[in-house]
Length: 555
Image (tube, rainbow, N blue to C red; front, side, top):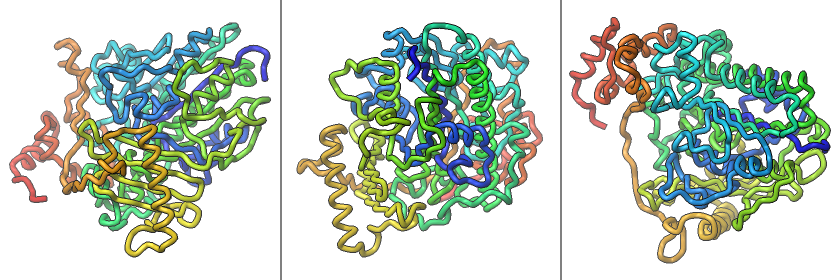
């Protein structure tokens, strides 16, 4: 252990799958720097998120608590906000310089939770002045770009290419600011805690060139079990995002989406390499714990699903690399079951800071044994999301053990049991049809564990009058829609500046001008028109006019 208090650096992309790295066995994607980090540290191959959604996962990491304790069971801001001790706050109180760069997804965005300085790059900021990346773009001649992180409202899950070049792309900006921070901190006696967050590879999948062309469509594997019988999915996932993601898309479009996703990861990897090189060059590597992880994964069409907020492996498993020469063993691949909850106790132990809370942290230090890892093997962990009490009927609980997983959905009492050893791709729900006596007994035992967990750590509203997990008896019908999120900050710039910006239609046309796996008329233009979309000023305005005249199709 170094004589001075070590630095702590968390590198945190958003929505990155556990298998989107060469070191994870992916022989298509190019991630030489993440692979190098795995060789220079420990690769935890069975890391999971406690809650597969942006805001809940981040608060699990920074508080070490479950959703009911920190109050973020969805992408919401609780009122009143519960009191919790936050990792940057505790480290700042102990003398650490605490800073964040990039996406944090706090609500409100400037609620610092102990970060002394924040250089933000958020997805949908309300004001340019609140977002350092937007201010940077204006300074460098890109203030006229309306959709700086890709077009969300019509093209959220549709292939597109960034109109901002690599040099100024958000993923490059995060790496640039992180390198600048490290150089600025060189030689200081005060240790630092820095959290650097990328928006990518979260959709829209708008990689810049040359990364948008880095992977050929035909080399991309198709999603796992993407043509799964939708009746074999829980009710709340059967149609969610299906139309918006063009779930019935041709294989080449699915491959193009994955190619862009991989391109975004490779750009992040390039930045990670620069950050690691800077640590080495400045002689800071031995004194700095580096953790690379993500808040959750991305289904990318696996099981016929998209996005996160599901208990499947592509959604809940995350990449997790940890490096600190001399402290963390080099080149070890670990199959210990760990979670994002483990980051806070790891950082506090390394910094020599005692946790002052009366409610214990839910994780354990990953420095619990020499070379890195848990001091005691973890046999199971619970993954949760949403809350039935606050108008959300989508709560689910998942009990994850090393080789088996049980999922329970409160909306309709749907149950799933997967043998992860024999069926790692979760193709066969052992509870469908006529389950064996052994599988039914296993499911009942695991459900009982979840029920007790919910009583102790979850929400009382999840339990019926008998103290059992509810079956709300709800169904959901298929309905098509498009993402309704337009850039808010554009509406708050001066009128004369707004007049110089690209139009909404130009944003769309420019983003997809080189795409050939779909046509503009294939998209949900009528629904986009209904929420305020416009192609005015482009050669495609007639498509929107024609679509708006069509009658609403029957679901």
